[in-house]
Length: 60
View 1 (cartoon, rainbow, N blue to C red):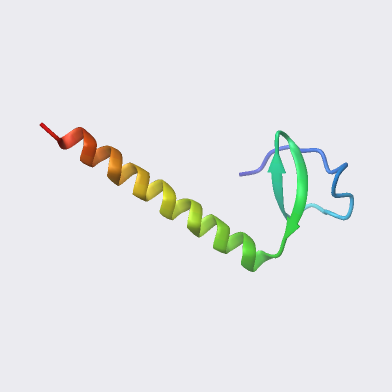
View 2: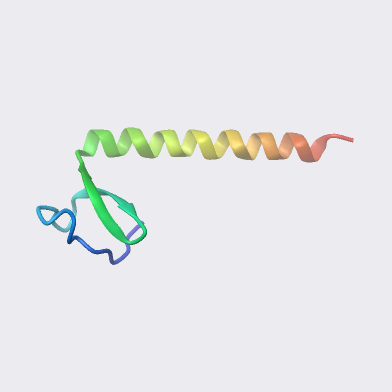
């Protein structure tokens, strides 16, 4: 996702860096490997939640 955020709390961050964002403020830097790992985990969680919701909806 790309969105305008404040870098006031992480002044060393530059455009293209991976950052952790909370309520519109960058609060930490991530290296590319950590960012990819985190995005994979979020995708796994979303898939598990979708499967659970689908299963709950299929119950009689």
